[in-house]
Length: 113
Image (cartoon, rainbow, N blue to C red; front, side, top):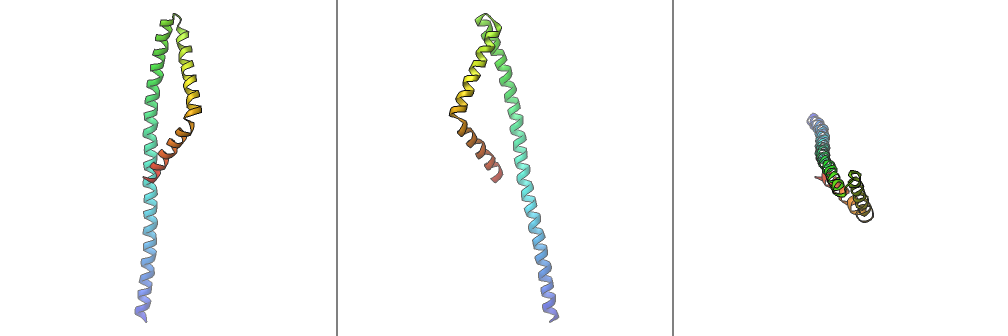
């Protein structure tokens, strides 16, 4: 009888230890996923900032060049503004759903990776 009680006690201790270990594994997996997503977001943000900076300076130079070709510097900036207005409208009306889908898929892939 004492042997059975000892075995049940040992079994309960092992079950509790198993539960603690499983909880720790779940915490570590969640930490791994969240750190992976966070590091990916940080990398994408840095990349975006660098590309955005390039585009801004490239467009400033292009606007100045177009302005000199047209004879008035401000005309180059108007041409570039009109180009971006048209580009924005095209993206809004034709690519809005696709861009939302791409972003959603990217986030889901990062979380399920």
